[in-house]
Image (cartoon, rainbow, N blue to C red; front, side):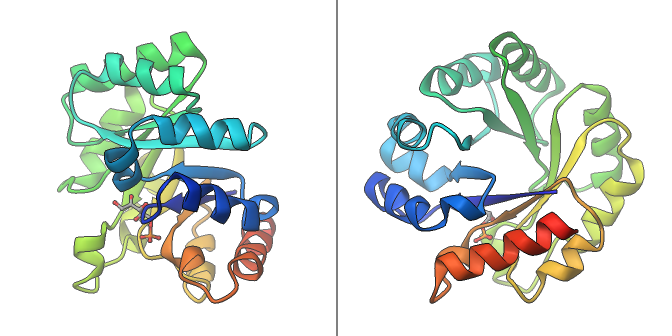
Length: 210
Ligand SMILES: O=C(CO)[C@H](O)[C@H](O)COP(=O)(O)O
């Protein structure tokens, strides 16, 4: 099981400062969608250049023109690129094909997918690398989480790695770990902590033991 730090509410220098504090305690650093919207793929390029030993995920949440967008993110240095589970199968296939060509991985974000079980089975057959259940900020605000959805994908997915994201904190991490996802994604649970390094270390220890 791996820990991914999601950076959403920072600029490039803020991202680099944050990673400097926690780099020993994370496996993957995510350049979040708001950062890519604000700063472009330059954010991916600069973070990868600053931390070449870390796996960098570009959270593009691709919906169309997937092969092209995966190619651009790969050229910027991303190791993993995200596409939405609600995208067309043709887009998913395009993303997978381009990622394979470039030696990269595709994570499918299941945000807004209504029938998680059916779509997860389809995505599993399409050869993506990760399927990630995700409660985004707008549903976190009304008290939702992804714990049940994680159980669903763990039950039906045969080949693909599983991941979970959305409002995970140190206190809720044990409940997530019990379900043994391959990847746990944490943003505010680390970046909003008083001591980011101590929180990331504690989370990483739990994830590694889990
Ligand atoms: O993709 C995202 C929002 O769309 C976030 O990166 C993801 O939800 C993790 O952040 P947090 O732990 O703060 O919810």
